[in-house]
Image (cartoon, rainbow, N blue to C red; front, side, top):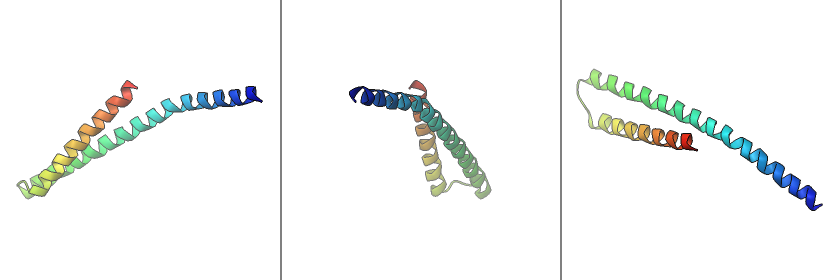
Length: 83
């Protein structure tokens, strides 16, 4: 009975080890998609700024938040690559 439990635990641990790279790949893909979305939003903000021929406070706030999001995404991507 103890031997069966040990095999079950080992099989479960092995399955978990195999899932880690899959999860990391999935997370990396999600971060890539987020980065593309942030870049698209930044382009939209730039187009909006040019159309309004000036910088509004709201657009500056949005730009700042988009840049922060982009930095966070890059940081998370870097962490995934190091794992």
